[in-house]
Length: 265
Image (cartoon, rainbow, N blue to C red):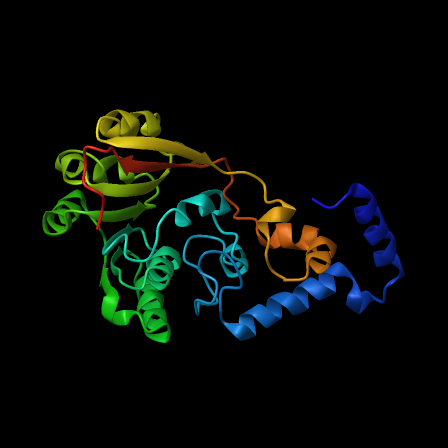
């Protein structure tokens, strides 16, 4: 972080500037430029052509490349070719379905999203990013449908965000079928009491479980705009734009197969 004296100096400069060069006006123009560019500006999926709307979650954090920044270290662990199959349950408008296909160009992505508007955006932007041939798109995922999918795909990466339905989807026969999968699941404990504890009990024998939790966005999280002094000047506006409006702290489990399991492919 820059020294506090620099922040005080910047605050003093703001008062002297014309209104169209004050942070709010500059930030508005910057965000408008992102809309025109149509691409994610930074983060693991930088360069991905992306819709100008989101389904069920905040939009600007994704365009700025800081959405779910708490998980950033996960995406640096793997290389293209580590996973031949990704299953994304609760794909919304495609941040991970499109993004992981973009990040891992040899990967086949099976995406489930019950909202037709979300599926339409995923299909549209899969074409824009030339990844449509590697994308398989479906509607609602039930435990039975997931089990049928897993019976055909024995290894890979599963990412799940389904507002509490992970309790049913990650249960029963699906637990055994996922023993060779890397699994990233957003936990909705606010909807299901002790959900995390149940999932930990189900998977702790087959997987090493890491927990990640939400935190406020910091200066070091941002890589756009590229000029660090401009980022510092706009830090409050960037933090406001990066607000994911979750309403309560959230957490994720990253579950990695234990050494006795075969590495996903």
